[in-house]
Length: 483
Image (spheres, rainbow, N blue to C red):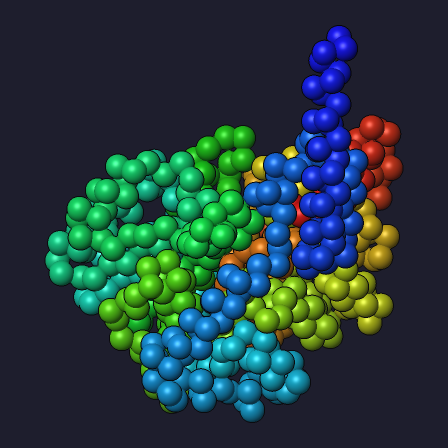
């Protein structure tokens, strides 16, 4: 026993010393004070359990990586599109009239993209409609196809996508396929090899491109983008896997939303892909950046669209600020659907202030869980939201994965960003904000159908929970800044 203690004692002391050093590092480098406290306390109190996770997940501020992305993006903006692309802002038109000039101006500066008129956008509700439209667009491609997903699985849907892309490549169509190396960690090599052998240029997106970043797993490319010939683009919540078609219990039926965009905004979406492709390959894809793709009928101003890309390389916390601005712009209502309700303080404050302004604030979340800790934290945030006057609904039929914001009766945003810290600060995301009464009404109808299949919860969900379950909720919320 004495021999064992002689060996264990120094190891325990070393763990606590390393934990204290790592805690200091967390305090200096974590973006938020909540995240810094969460890491620091856990590293000092439980270094045996948290040192290894901190090594892989601990950094939410990555200056070297961010600086490299910014330099590359500045170069891309002069090489990858015509100079007039950034001057096509429509901030003096419908967006200004409906949402206010300051709102339109701040969002164009925040995302670095212009508000563009002349688009048409349609919702694609659930996986069958989404992938039917995507496969139809791929089949009719004449020049190029770009594909980007966070998760790609080698299942029935993945095989269909692989066969469709190889078929187009064999016809001389250029095909570019980008997937996240962490989200698609279990994608077999044979799947990638088959696509490459078929003429598809396929690469993983990895933020550990340089050796100094080798152990980092925090930064993930959560975007879902498909674009064809510069004419049509698809953005939303679906990944490539049969669960997104509702084919995997216990989360089925899967509730998700994509959009199809036609018009000048396609160029903005393609540029976001170009940034990611250049980071992954150090090359530019060989396709024309359309100055104006076919969209609204001639003589019609069409829908005004703003593409908002966000990620940890941004100078600002773009995604969080986008949610804050969208909520602040609401005068009558703001309805949000998200699979994860773990807002930061800025977003939560904006939601509470909206309630005080008399805005109808509703948040639709799942009743089923896919991540235990996040779900537990979401329950506590739901209770806090109810106390602030926010209405919370749980979608009953299956798992809710869509990411939608409806602002009054004039604007709606759909894309890949969740209402959580990972989307706000750690993931690369994309949202498309559309200003158009007709489209907002279409989204309203979709959400009213979702609310009809949902249960509005009250404070009893928390109050009737056991003491142990409530303790677990509070513990889970402690880790919400680093989930």
